[in-house]
Image (cartoon, rainbow, N blue to C red; front, side, top):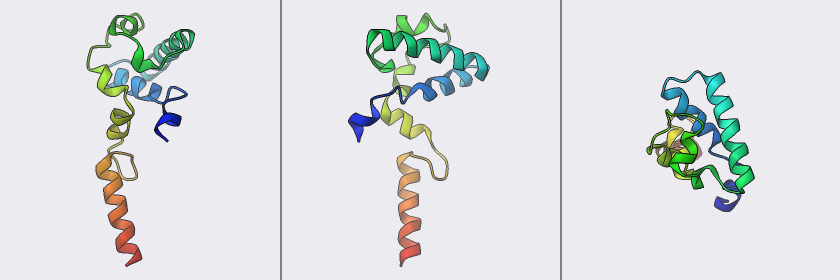
Length: 102
């Protein structure tokens, strides 16, 4: 599953969310991410394999903290809401299911 999840720029949405949190309007963040993904596709690599200087050519708002965001683990942890993929949310869902089944 991990290998499959690494294909297809699964963290592109996380990059957009990161940019929005930095104050960039979503419409602009979407365009920035599209350009970054196209660049990564030409290089045949994942967004997380781009260097900081490469990512910053798309937005000066991107800083070194982006690399925590562009991992599958970072992506999963960021979904911290009911039904989300954050480990705490998954554990809570498992607990609710066990209670329901008991």
